[in-house]
Length: 346
Image (tube, rainbow, N blue to C red):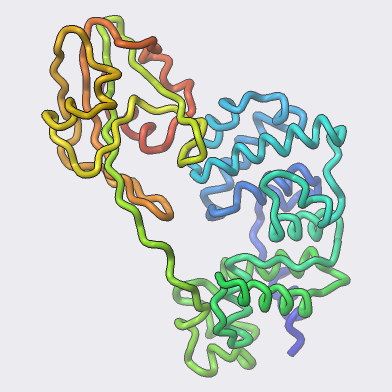
């Protein structure tokens, strides 16, 4: 089976017209690859275009503040990607004089760049013969070659990397790698793959053994953690509110949110005011807090579901330094907070 030849032929006839494909400039390819980590292409395109418009060069991105980068990234999720993007841009701009590493090995020194991203950039920009292995690649190779080793196991990652390197077209690694990823995204999809018009169906083990829906195999994910967030939305007579920046290595690091009280279960107003964290914001004159949403908003992340309620806390003066409500959209916030701000009729 001439796998690589058939794949490239398919790619040249079916590839999408994507904005980063018009260039081999490392900055643009790197930016697109970071954005597309954990993100569908359709969702990533507008973010890529925004970043290129605001930060046309790696120097522009490096000179921006972290808050500017996070604000532009807002809604895309997995915010560590944005922070790593910024760190890597500063490294390239300041330590490498704006010149991206030109090999797989050296690309790995960039923050947020792992095996897959380094392989993609090296092959697309420099024609270096290194194979990419991502979710699309796992799916295609596991089906075509009938591999049932879990793709998210140590053994599975090794097996697929070795196979990907063996199949790689070393004279045309760029089109081969892009073709393999594109084939998984458009043709050999997770659900309802187009087996009837597949160029590999004659030799595809999964298709011929009626195992397409069984492959690839994945180990069970971690148990989903259920969390209960209660946000205090202060509104003073001076039209100010309180925003706090999240610190530490948890979710949404560096983003802003309203004062948060996390409880073990869904809390009533009576229980909420008894919480120790609530006392940080208790006012000298008792005030009434009103529940904005009776039914918790469930925000789903990869390993946790956050059940959220917003409590409106009107007061004369804020218990802490605040910001004007009309300026709240300047701050980078999680999409959960963004949707509330858009919905709340101040």
